[in-house]
Length: 443
Image 1 (cartoon, rainbow, N blue to C red):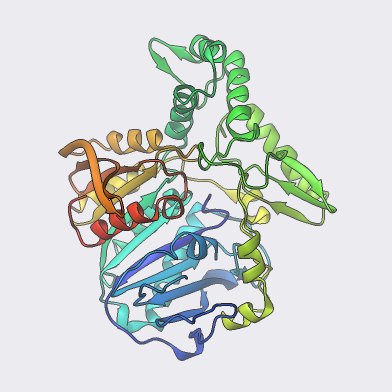
Image 2: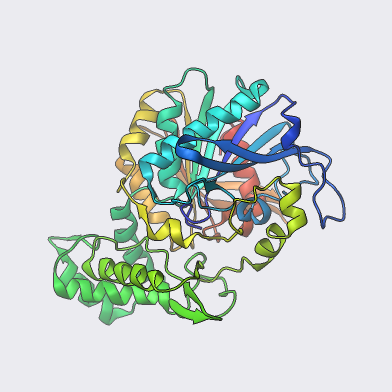
């Protein structure tokens, strides 16, 4: 899921205990068995009257079934002596809100507010301030996490140990360019369209699908985008069915404008910019606008989190909006300032002390594995271990989890058969990967 829309950070803090009592979640409605671990939910106040919702699970045990990523992705994880902190950011996403209800923001403001929220968390939970800290995120977290890490690494009071980004937006250019190859070699485009793309978008053996101004190239790329994002394929997992069936990119349902376009691909092309302007115009004409990622079913999470008893248990402010998986207001007014995060990664790697992991489910089309692999290669780090299969054990025995290539202090890893939400699609493999990352074991 695009983290701008449903965004959370998972901060992993090893060891320790205690916390502020007012935020403790003492009972979660609807569970057959209440968790045995402590958890806290409340607000972290940052700049300009913004209040970011957090949910922290402390020393989670095997009965953990802990907002959409927390509820549907990380519930199966069984980590002992590991504390997790989820941050719903920016304001306007999830239960996070702003006093003035102004949800126009951009990458830089979000980065600063995330840093301020982290500092506020440690003010409320000082017993964790010296613990090992890992920053993780997925999707648009590919922008959020490195830009946050750049601030955190300069703060000597924070014990940053590593960064992990899953199916992240690391470079718009590489994501667009690689997506076309991904689509063709997965049998989506056909020989006629591929031939046109080669003719109009490529020159001297190099293709530019990102910001090519050739009119015929743009027409061909528009067709690619329609196939990938509008034909009914599950963009988050090519080989999975589409929950809810094939839907239109924009529709009116029960008087509500529903947009199923996240606007993250081919943003440098004129037809994409015109389409986004049209969407903003349509949104301004409707009182109720809902942004639904295609081929996702957020109904169970929405029903649960908007239950008044659940909101009460989580100490949700009456000023917070109803929980939705994506915020149309944030998305349609968001300022994308970073077209790639190469500078942030190089700064992290130059410190020679942080463990960095970039991982991708290999059948995701939102942020495909090839683009992130190209991105990691473009950092030109010393190769330590050449690309190889990595293994894990399940009930059937030893299995191939995917492939990994290790460089100095950074690794690129794929999860075989997984889509965008790796812990949901491949929980056992994801658990093995995260465990090795956090404990600094070989992949």
